[in-house]
Amino acid sequence: MTAVGALVLQLRRDAGASIGSLAAAAGLSPGLLSQIERGQGNPSLTTLIKLSQALKVPVGRFFDAQDQGGALVRANNRRRLEVAEDNLVYELLTPHMQGQLGMLRAQIGAGWDNEDAPFQHPGEECVTVLEGSLHVRVNGMGYDLAEGDSLTYDSSLPHWYRNPTTEDSVLIGAMTPPSF
Image 1: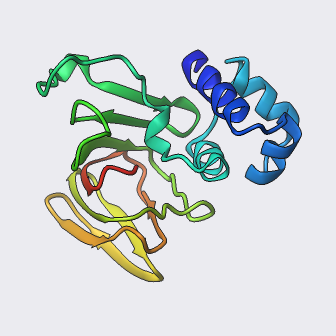
Image 2: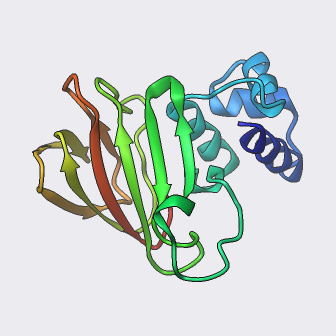
Image 3: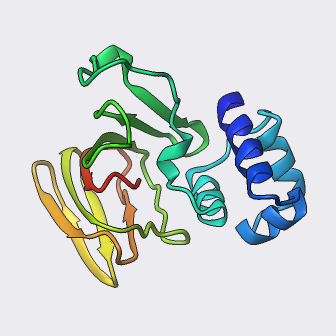
């Protein structure tokens, strides 16, 4: 979270925004934003989504930014974004988010949803459920996915996920262009 906080601080300063103005734009308290910037908090994914929207950057910017040095991504060397509070883990399967395709593996905690902060970004996305089940809503239309099911959709439409079960769900997501 220290790296995420430093990145938020850098992006806020680059945008010429005060803590108060960014907090207001993201719908957060200035105190929470200050804690995040100092690496003293573990923001929820909803909070990261709100910050990314207010800063006009993809949520994927909050992934660990270590240089992978090539196209091969070893299973034990993936860039990770962990949101412990929500029991979410995102692992980047592509070496970076600057190419034409982005892929990630996501663990979605039991009972989690982002209905209050839906994703919306240019492009097309496909998700495949590897473990568990997932409810996906795209532009008001709901889809219940079980293990092995895939859903492809226009990611410029508002979309959100819900894990309605008591077990974690695991999915693989692909997006073009990369804009998580």
